[in-house]
Length: 252
View 1 (spheres, rainbow, N blue to C red):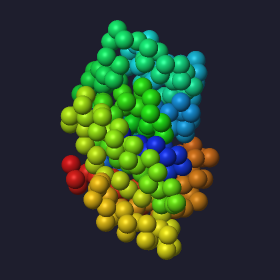
View 2 (tube, rainbow, N blue to C red):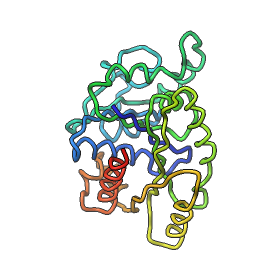
View 3 (tube, rainbow, N blue to C red):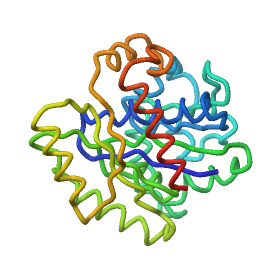
View 4 (cartoon, one colour):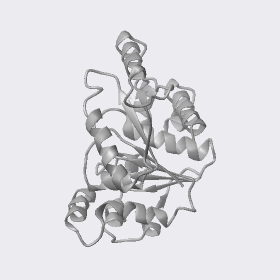
């Protein structure tokens, strides 16, 4: 099972949208067995799949060892795609993990994922724009990191800190690989064209050739509680996410 963290410490960069659609395309187009993990307390990934239920087990229960991984995984409405949901209980869970020194804090998620290693081809981890116990667990459990970037005045904010945290995670997970960054919400204007050129010319981190075009269909799909390929498969963003997954698979 290849484990992929989608992460950026800056909000509003289409991180959750990217995690959802990469997972969905791997499962439905490429017929891979996929597990998507919601590590964000807001639970937007969970809500899109209509699986938000505070009465049921969530990632908070898993990382605090209140349930087994088999008890927390739920089926989505899509073939080959399962979910570990999240809710606001994750706030308290992060504190509990940090305070519990009886077991290694950073390996909790990895330990549980090892139990389902043979059941899935890919695990997509939707990380919050934060540095906390669950994010550290996500990075330590991952093989690859993908970073969505929205080009604006603040595009580079937090990138150095994010790279530093990835390097820190390599102490516990030497095989962690920053696979690359990709531009989201791309528009054909001077800001985006020039910004993408600057990113492609940088020597600090790799860039994917594929960018994700801005489209109102992406926003509409969240109200429809559907991945973009289900909502509008002919729109630019749907085609771009398919191309991004193809490009990622070609680099494996």
